[in-house]
Structures are given as C-alpha cells and as structure tokens.
Image 1 (cartoon, rainbow, N blue to C red):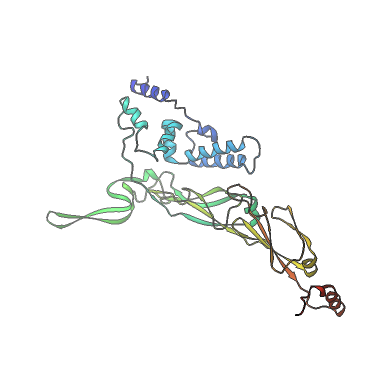
Image 2: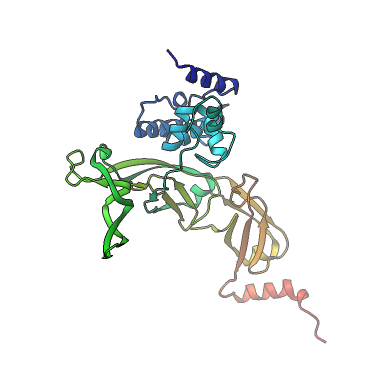
Length: 367
C-alpha cells in the first residue's frame, strides 16, 4: 500500500506534467549499470551515430540524445537527481545552478503536501579535486582540415571497489588530509590547530589502516578508453577536455583529462588562424608572360591559380575560400600564395642579345 502522503506527492508531480525521459534506454543500460558499463555503451553509440561518420537522417539528433544521456548518467549527483525526480526535476536543479537553493523546486512542492526536509538539506562541503592531467595529441594539418576521431587508451588510478568499507567516523577529520588537534596552553585554555593527516579522507571520515577490503591501497590502476573528436578547423594548442576522468582519490573529485593539440609541421602549407600560406617558385619566363599554377590541397582537390601579366618577385596572390575550415562552420579562410622568381644564374651571349633586343623598348629614355 502506498502511503497517503506519497500518493498525494505523486499526484502533484503528475499534475506538473513531469515525465521521466528514459536516459538508460537511450544508452541501452539499466539503473543497476555501473559507471564502466555506461561509459562503454556511450563510446560505442557515439562512434556509431557521430555526425562526421554517420550521414543518415536523424543521426545528428540521436547523437545529441546519446550525449545528453551520458552527461546525466556519468555524473553521480545528476544521476541521483534523475533517478529520484526524473528529467524535469533534473532540469529544475540545473536551472537553479545545481542542488539546493532557490524556490520553485521540489522542496517547495513536497513541503506543500507535508514532506519536510526534501529541498532544505544543507549543501555538502565541496570536495577537493585531484590535479588535471594534460597530454599532448599530435595531429597533422590534414587531420585538422578534415577532422578526425581518435580512440586513446589512458591508464589512471581509480578507487578501490570496496573503498567505502574501509572508512570510519572521526570527529577530528575536517576534510581530505586535514585533522584538528587540540592542545592545552594553560588550565582552561585549549587551542585547536590544523595538521596534515592523509588518513583523513573527508569531514568526519578516516581511512582504516590495513583494511582487508582494499589490500592494495585506496586506488588501483585502470585502463580507460576515450574518444577524442578533433573537429574541422581546430588549432594548435587548443585543449579537448574530458571532465572528471583523471586520477581518483578518496575524498576528492577526479580532475580532468585534457588533450592539447600539437600541430605537426606541413611540408608545403603554413597556417595562421584560418588562413593558409604557400610559397611557389616560378621561372623568369612565367613571371614575364603569365602562367597558370595548379596545386593539390590538403583534402586532395586541385586549386587552379591563373596569373596574367608580369609577376614581381615575392608577389602575394590571395585565393579566397581555400584556407582552413572556420570553427563556426561558416565557410573557409583564405589561401595566400607567394611567388618567388627563379632567375637564371647565367645567360649565353645569344640569350643575352635576344633578351636585350626584345626588352630594349622597356628601358627608360635618357634625359
């Protein structure tokens, strides 16, 4: 039998039109699925429906649903809120900037029907964060032009599976690595000082020494695979961040894994922002009479550059729309071609006389 209060609360939720989106079904998981199982399901589906790989109608929308489902279920706090209150409850929490605070939420709803304390719990002390891990990811200019998806294996430290069974209560622990020690200065005068103690893993919690549930210590190595999506037009030095999958530590939030793009030098093209640069050497005869130059671009298509008239040494010609893809998706940058004239090292007497005869009319008249 459902209690009257629970029944009334349920009616209140239904009256607000709150319908829980099945994020578990989206990923093909259940509420009992572990973090690893959810992550594995997401990697598989994100590769299958990624817009750069799957051009079928609806693939992009499906990819967005998969990403949203993973965003919620991979976050412990969001997952708990979603399990209790559904999608609408999660949206209200996010609109308020996270858990707690603000009116109009579930705390107000339940209080109206006799449930006290649902939205009024004090926010827990913010956990510390382990250091972020930065890894270089070397990519070619062609990969930055076309976009590329990488599967990268990464070994990190994760919490022992049964770590919670290796903790005990301790009033002296004020946070991760922080312990309060009392010392008497004089009769009736007691001073409290903070000292470092790695056994303290959180406020009021201490690690048990030699705990049999975690014989290898608080953490153990784990191989993690991440899908790194290098999108078209990304730049050298740009970060790609995976939140909360760096090393884990008891009493801490896992830091971020950050890949820093390192653009490899190209043999022909140079780059500055969205623009590309190239230097082309032409013979003297082309510089004088005009020519057409054809070059192969990064994706294999040909670019034809017609030049008429006389070309001065180090002349720069702009070819619009043949640079790098813009990150905004709005077109391309430009290609700038610098022409260097290859002068012959020497001329035969016949060549010299012929050129002098042809070009004598271009000499300025002597005053």
